[in-house]
Image 1 (cartoon, helix red, strand yellow):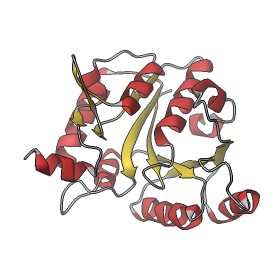
Image 2: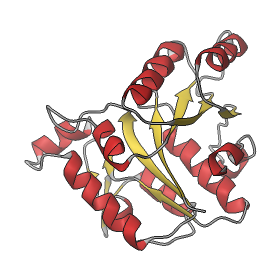
Image 3: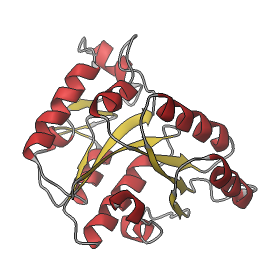
Image 4: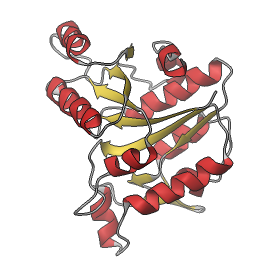
Length: 228
């Protein structure tokens, strides 16, 4: 059994990495080999080994398959801004074709049972004036897991993103509610609305965890439907 999934978020701060890391942790606890990839990351820190992104490093911590950093995060951009703008400023424009090629190169030599590819920002974050990261997912034909950052306005973001995923001919494999606002009003009513209006299974509700403990978050997730 080999499962490859794309992790999309309703917004930049929806908690994609936290939830993706928790999903990898959950799969690992169930005896599966795991691999997390972050092909494009903006907001990297300069280190003695080169640019490093905190999100990519988090995925690596939960991956049983060990890869060089450059294969996990081949496009590392220093500025914490929209990736296509950061790349343009370096005169290194992004393209879906290049990103697909980088991912396929890694996936051809890796055989993890549970592989997650995490996006950057929202589902349709631009790569250039003509393409978005969604074009990469469409080319790979990868089912999508949607991370919903639970805050005021999340219903609109979630429904629009789900609609875009399905319009692209992709499978919405499931969604996860990640409570990023501990004081969100009408939380339960929002959850009920998502259950009623999203045509995909809910994989779990992650409460607000101030410590960002990945193993704790994993206890709130159920990946059985992803593995079926």
